[in-house]
Length: 269
Length: 200
Image: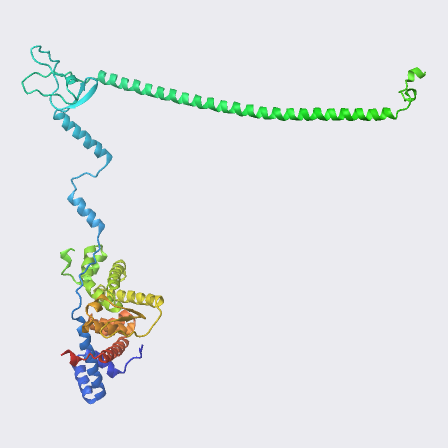
């Protein structure tokens, strides 16, 4: 690239081309153009180049600004402004909300009834006292219905008597005791089962160990027997060899009286 | 975007943005992003790359806003950042691609030749038969410094002094680059049969 600085005339040419000259400078430049044909030709050339470059702006695709910084602190502030009345969620608020809901439901008549051997949630006022059975009317008890949770509602005006009672602390204690007993029994049974399984496994283990010990003892005994038999045969062979040697010695033997006998020093004396 | 900022000058918006008003910067970005995008598109010859670079430019501008000494010169400063990013991109292209000289295409087929890399930009495909694409193709063949000087002067209204401040050269050097760039562009267009008389 040619970065060598242009002469002042051409510097002015470019300045004039882009309208950077004031009136006085422009007048001087126009006078210069009239004098210098080469400069005039360059002026025309550059002016035409500019005119052609301007066409590049035609049909230029439009660009929609798409750059947006998001300020998180402002977003958070907006959210807080919009829901300021809402407390921030926390477990304590969850429990408090649940308790409030329960209180509202109880205020609306929700109650926990003891039905037979179970508990039942019901709406409506509880029985003030145990109703006396009216023999003349038909009595429907929950046991007669197919489901213990569904009480049949006759539409013929008959009186409905249920065995539902208000649960007392004693009832709850008894219920808890029963649950505790059941759990204890289950745990005992489970422990028994585990103990039995453990005993069975240990028995199997000892049995296996005894068998293995027996097998090893038998193997050892067989080896010892083998060694004993070997020793016996060796002894037999040695005895036979001794007999043979004895016979040989007797065959070439000296007369009996010449056989050296140990001297008895006492006798010599 | 906050409409309170719409009527403010660049300098005021810069001051507000420095104080932490993100919407003030968003207003600045909305004001100058189209110009930055057009500049980077012509510098790089690729729409997607230009979009990336213009976004990167604005992010850099936001992060370095405290370094801007003259808030009124935000536009020139942002274009300066864009120019530097375009230079970086072209430098990395040169490392990636073996350098080739001019690539001559089929008649009517527009190629943008950039640091030995030839590609068809979506615009050039869209305007293949048009003069716009041809002019952009010719501009793309100019050396980077001449091209940037012409683009900033011709399409973005910066003076030679402003371009000189951006590119850290005297204004006379900028005029020299414009002079040679315009002559080269005109010669190439003439070689392809494009003249001012033909436009009429």
